[in-house]
Image 1: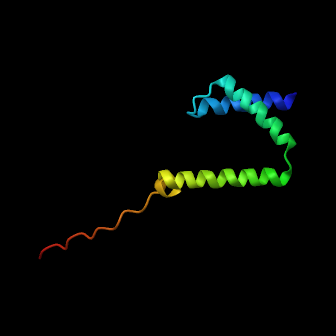
Image 2: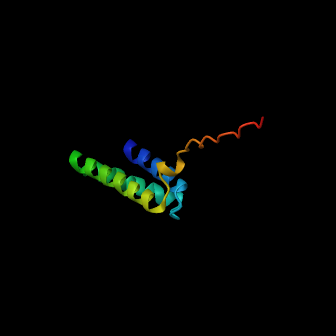
Length: 86
């Protein structure tokens, strides 16, 4: 019972943060379903699901151009000052 409540709460919170158009109640329902599905999965299947999600996220970021490379700042090149005329 507690797992369903926690799953519904987390699903509600995630649905509000994403732009998929799923409302809070829809997210809560997805959270309950996800919690029930995870209970029936084996550990290797959970690891494979997590690794697949991570790879899909990285590929998506690479294709859209929003990744770590875009957010890192580089040092500006040093500019030499002109020598003073004598």
